[in-house]
Length: 404
Length: 87
Image (cartoon, rainbow over all chains, first blue to last red):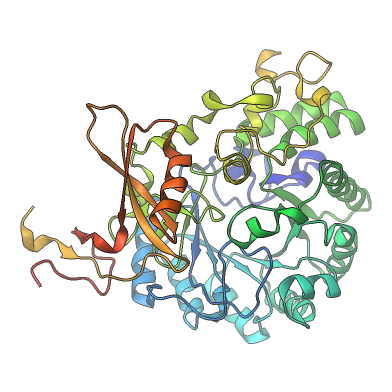
């Protein structure tokens, strides 16, 4: 995740320590005082979902899957994650709220020292359920809305899904839950981006996460709706512009870009062009700490059957299963050559990445998209949208700060 | 480790869209065959394609085995449906 509001507007946030090793600079209570040493774990608690979204990476459907974890197994898993020192567990799905024991699991996660957060379509969040989740210790609810009403409902396969999600957001805010929007940008909804921020900011929402399309699960089937290079530049610019406009008006929204580390280079260039050389240097310094695409390093996924994945979108390959051995043992198994290669991917970058001045803060982007398009996880990310002038170090772009 | 300290992991499915295939690679001819995880695929040839795209950069030999043909015995106690190793 790249925090646009932090990088361009200096907004303090709970994730500054975790993401940028900048806890000391923040007045907000931090998720972690130090940059994370253990991955954030996404747990797909069920395959079941009440919607059928076009881009679902988990290929969720209307029923759960055989082999899903019981409540007792779920608690054992949470113990395992806590013992290993995982900082955050993200309850996901499918739709996690179709599990009747979700509040119990969130409560347990908080009790064993994990920070429980939630990824949901929001449509099943009643006022009562929101309050129960808040009381259980839920630290954050990320609610997916992918456009204004007509766009969102088409994308999510159900009329009324937009209104239900907005009600869910309002219930979470009323319960005092920190709540944010999750928005996957495609050709279908790019024109709604500003309207959705304006609408939800009016309801009191102040955190907006914009995802680039991941080519995993059903997301791989709709890659033809992905943004073109020009559209992506325009969309990311719009996120930067609207973040600054909100802050200039005194409305300190938090905005983040997720899933494409070409954003790191773009935002640095944006800061230089639109703000100042000094701001660009600050942005770059934070991004050097952040570390590029997190697959296999700062994020992990455990699916509803216990398979461990390199991130939540990369469900077709598993490192092992937590019914066989602990998550920490699987994650730290240094005999896996693919994991080792991903963790030292700077040495394996190819093509346009080899002479890119932002390779150290991007690390080639998404290995899953590269795999989907080029059959090679170390090939350049097909979503890279930096221009040759932005990438090449000898044409006036910014150099790494450690070379200053 | 004494036999009784392990339990047999249940036969719960490992995949819903297709089957799970355990992947083994040997990096040079003198290396041992090594388990490197699993891929999800309908058939062995698709599983092979998937595994090959992930591991060809390092693997000389590549083996696949249907995950449901592997009986797993472990001291881990997470699996609620696990049975005693001797059952």
